[in-house]
Length: 205
Image (tube, helix red, strand yellow):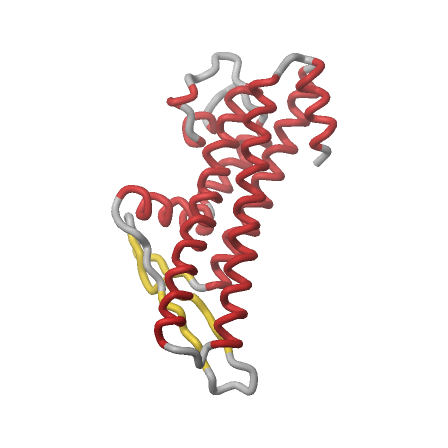
């Protein structure tokens, strides 16, 4: 989507608060991408240096825990902030910022049908549930710990970071492929929701 055009719209219509939420959403997107890149780099380092001292491997495993946690919390934050974008941009009777969540705004009659449907599909998706479940477990219950695994049997060593099980209402598992898929899902959905908000704003003038 054309973020510069949206910023110009917000400037013209004096919607600075709306733009601040959009900017925050973009910030979380880049933060998540940064952490994903760090995870990739650390797994590559594990493949190359996996035969190092056990202390070095354990240190790398701890660093991966920090990066995965930061990534998943950033993705969850994107969902929370896009709810603020929708509330500020489209709701006639705006909710107070502390009362805003996706479930609340998704049922508003102020939203066009395609945006409500996009929200419904997103919140029903297993990747959305993985992200929110991970985040709620990490924030409110305990740290979600994983394990660095290195396989030297192939000609090129393989490394992965696996979270065998975490639960809130149901048991879930993660590995690097699923972590990257969570990022692709969240970033794609947020971009689509921002596009729909932009289209709706322009149609309303």
